[in-house]
Image (cartoon, rainbow, N blue to C red; front, side):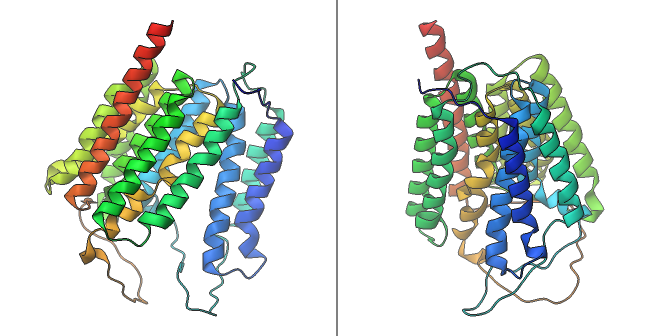
Length: 357
């Protein structure tokens, strides 16, 4: 095993300040849309690293952090109901510059910096020597880089089904290989992150007329957390995630019920069943749905009918029932297979650990 790396509260505070500066920079400097998106990603990553440090060894804090990140990924559409929309352009013509304001008000960023940075500075994590090793640091670097390369190489513009499946297989292989080399708890949480990434292949679209669905999902999420806290059952949680993903094959109310109720229940159960872990694992596993965009982004490109662009200068008004947007059946089956691989690997790691013990 590699030598242990001991994180410091002061370093976490620096990460907090750097993350806030990256996000707030467009408020002070004219920055084009494309660069501002990159700055947001860098800033969010720094904030996550700083927030993960004080949670080391504290199960409740890690559950709150992991669920906060993963539910944001799966339920961004629900959060959209209560936030002011900012017109953002991710594409610009050569030579054009479309400056944007900071996506988060500066005063909110300042408050978040004081809160997260202050907690990190005085935190005393429950950390045993060797909790933060070279393997975890490697994990946090290798996976995002590998997923980025796969997205650029095979997932960003290609409509070839074979290329997309190849990218998915490589992503699964890299994630499983790295998770297998970690401790049982850390590796298990990374595999849960892989499964959550896969279930994002279908997205839930909320509207202002159906906010009850958000409340129903929140109740199911809380129930899953309570059950997972009292009786850890990660494989059951992943099994329910697989059911949710597979329901995307059915264009019926069953899919909506699955993604509104079953999915948050499974998410809460899976996450709560796998913590606590080392802080590198909780931050890396929670961020997997963000970095592995082959399911949430690239899968939509496989269907030529959805590649349409339009212009509108009117206000966006959304009404109607909650719906689930599903990709082509191939993507749904690949996502379900990914979750099955994660479940199987967790089982094999548990058997292997029991034999070694």
